[in-house]
Image (tube, rainbow, N blue to C red; front, side, top):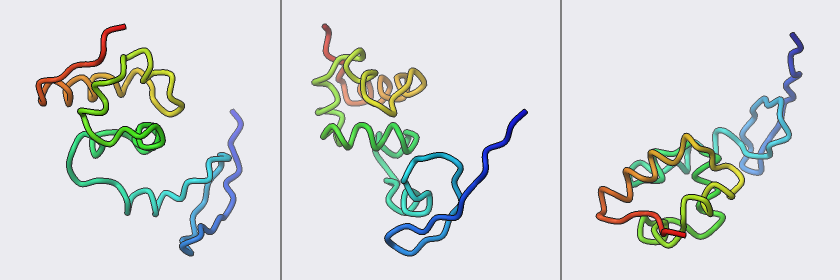
Length: 98
């Protein structure tokens, strides 16, 4: 079993953290900007960033996409779909049908 070496990094806000991947996201900054309510608060950071990057910050905006389109976003995986479906259902909405 091989282990990845973690390297010390410092983000633009001065937070020091260790990471073994090439991902530039600071985990401290991500935790600070995580929403405390709404459907985005239920998602992992990569899934949340993927939706935000594509301009999706409300369930109404989410409903304009199909599941297939959402799964194409880097950072969204099959585990996110049940959370997204439930959030849409709670608002009386659903994913767009292809």
